[in-house]
Image (tube, rainbow, N blue to C red):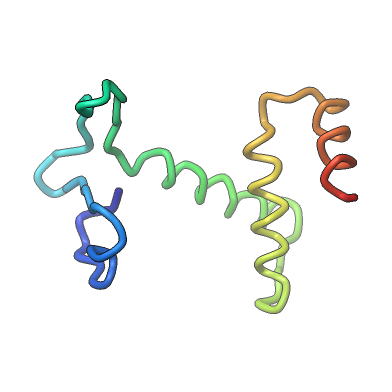
Length: 98
């Protein structure tokens, strides 16, 4: 799901669907032949990056390009486990360390 920009090179690997905010089209919902419900929207990923930027400015103040992937990995772990209790998150971390 993209913001309407034509990302060349993706078509051979992915089916691109996009939203167009200029035309006030912010997304749609449809069902596949298998009955899977698909929601096309960029709001979710825009929300993720917005929270990531707030984490950087609010906690770390400055990050180096060298360690950017580590900051992103930490944030994604926190985001994907946002509904876990602290003990559930800690136990998951310990299971994945080994």
